[in-house]
Picture 1: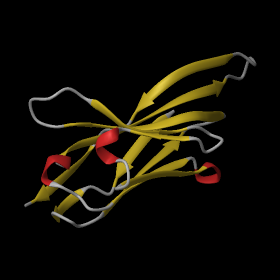
Picture 2 (picture 1 turned 60 degrees about the horizontal axis):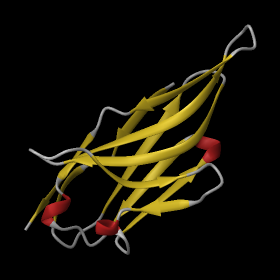
Picture 3 (picture 1 turned 120 degrees about the horizontal axis):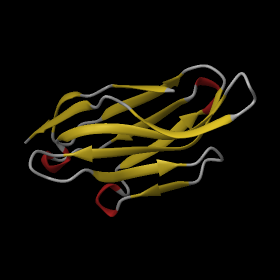
Picture 4 (picture 1 turned 90 degrees about the vertical axis):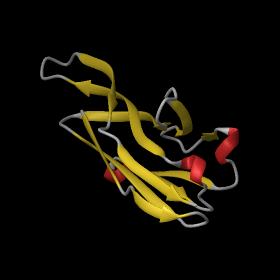
Length: 123
């Protein structure tokens, strides 16, 4: 399973961006999908996550500003980011827990990461 993240860019403070994360592969299912971010000189931190049934969790620093959603038919998760602040500047990564169904009927359980997309918020 591979993840492709997109949608990052340069935006002014107070603006909005929408990130997308599409999973691809053969014979797989996705459970939880997550967005993380890593700012220069800082550790990677969890931003938001969503289960395949739609339950959501957010880090305190994005509550009320960011919304995570997903389209299970498209194996895609989204992160709508509003009221962006300069401190939101980071590389945003998506991650997903998956089950890959093999031809011999075995199941591989794994975790995939996207390549990251840069979000820069100018003040």
